[in-house]
Length: 188
Ligand code: VGL
Ligand code: ZN
Image 1 (tube, helix red, strand yellow):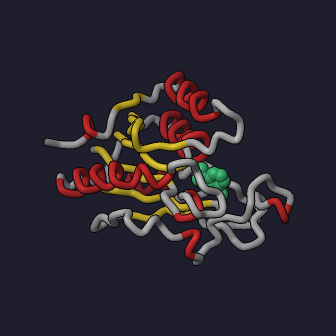
Image 2 (cartoon, rainbow, N blue to C red):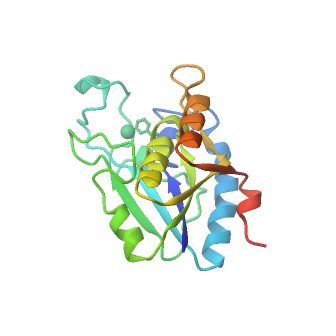
């Protein structure tokens, strides 16, 4: 059984947000088509979100490397306004404690348990950012034995260093991830 994992498509990771990913919002129409396709064919859609306390340890003011972002309950932490919410979807909040920095949707969450409970063994992953939360979610999924496909036109990188996104794609590929266009993943 397959599921779609929509990673961190939140306002703060989109242009205008406090940790904007270049072109981050450009994935939304493509991700929406995937969401519709999965949802219409009875497959589950799971959304992860970065959900930090205001004094999170990843923020520069508290010893971390990032500007404050995705503070729980703020507009910056809300999903992009155009992102479709599928009926029966599951939201996984992560890194919601001061000291826990989870880039992976599996880290410190019930994601693995939920997927196992639903009999899901096959994941399609899309979202932000390629070199952080997408990469770590995909690597964890593979190490937990999920067959994992990345929707290659539905991801964007932070690219703190030029090439980070490309390196992340290589790393995911080496670990066994398969890259496909969203078009090829849509049931027709
Ligand atoms: C992320 C940087 C900091 C992500 C989260 O969702 O990729 N990146 N926190
Ligand atoms: Zn974060």
